Length: 246
Image 1 (cartoon, rainbow, N blue to C red):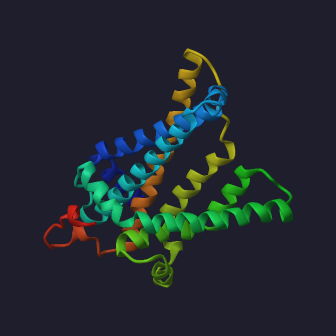
Image 2: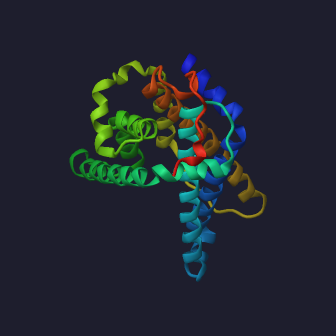
């Protein structure tokens, strides 16, 4: 599939930025898993739990800024590498809207969990999360792409759906389904010691890295799908200076 190859080419040529995103995500997940493991029980009883929470919040903000900046510069300049400071400055322009979008998704997710428990009779959050992803797939994939490409508000982005037939984005749908399936089989993080816990970190990091790469590929493909033939970096116009976006 040509779309997947194009996304892979961008990820390959901008590997330092991708590696930074992967590293932050994996490190944040390790902190979270450690806090809820056996060692985490001790942390919860100490004064360091507040500090760890602040660290996780900082990770989340920085990672979101870098990811948003990465995707916006993919739209503007394709596979041209960017400095992390450029990604941070560019991503800051979209952070507020993405936080609002995440809150909206959270409300709908809670509704799916509620109705799943009351109507379907299942409380398995893995199944409900997978169902939520599949039910709202079109919105999860395209709304962020609309905002990043057209720099519009959330309400305005909803009006853009009429211009696109999501069924034409088959490679994106396939990758998204592949990304969703592992949610059903996600295992728990077991506490260990010495070599055992190092092995667990490795076993956790590998699927996280693969999932993040697939997620970035989906986002890149969504941007190219939304932008169609109007990709800025494919035009003959002068290159944009993304560092000026605030």
